[in-house]
Length: 402
Image 1 (cartoon, one colour):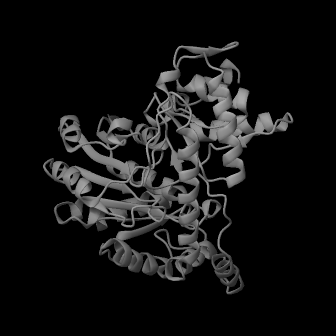
Image 2 (cartoon, rainbow, N blue to C red):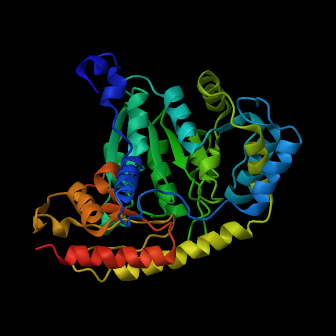
């Protein structure tokens, strides 16, 4: 792009970082287009197809004429299903006026930040964090404040760390559990300890991203919004992409205090309006129908997790924990910094991921994108055969580092 053309772009877009996961996925596609056998473990996308009964519900909705504009907050049919789901699965009571459906959970988070942040307001983000959190906060005029936990803490921030990071300008606490990129899961007691700290700060609200709720290996998902002291100060974000393998459907939602939900609908009404009508009807069916396919996907991910942990743990110098949810492994690779293999010098996680892509033809994502520069993310949402081959390639490449 020429200097003349960039001079007409806003500072907002010039200062915005490209999504690291999308960037790496494109690099992998480019390498594959050159004829290389690339295994892509970069995107957080289930390799399963959307269950047939959900697709059938969408087809039925199309045949019934669900092809028109929808109310901005979502069709009543879907909001009623979400209302029931929140009560059934999370112990959360929301009125229909407290639920807003969006074009993906990412839009839900953007709506919230645009609605709640003024210039200079701080957002405490538990790190490692999903790549878009920081960018969305900055776009809304906020200041991301990262609170980091390493592998020795199972990547989970303590109440003491949170308390030390909160200032009079802290407006939002933002985190995911199960977590992208680490797969770590906060227990109910751990969430309550964080909530007690947040509750001490007047005007501080909690955004709890629970998009990986159904990919949880602990047997019990905990929602911070069910804890009474922060019930009226918590916004619960969820969606259909991960638990129902509906990434391309672009369907997410929030449960929030009514005044926040109203503000999010106002923002969304000026950007995209409502999500697709037939997609919403399929989503309503997904929440109320048989969950067996979702549970089967979770069990498959658990088996893949164990396969990855076993293989990666055999690589000298690679630190691997045992994530309890999502479909990611987030190893600490700082032991390899300063090493080389031919023309490749490994000085940081960016170098390490570039090395794996070029040498092993395995696409991963640098930890620096997630606020954890000593780590890298592997998505094991791929076939067992691909995962086994990828681990072997990674092992061979790493053993060449001297």
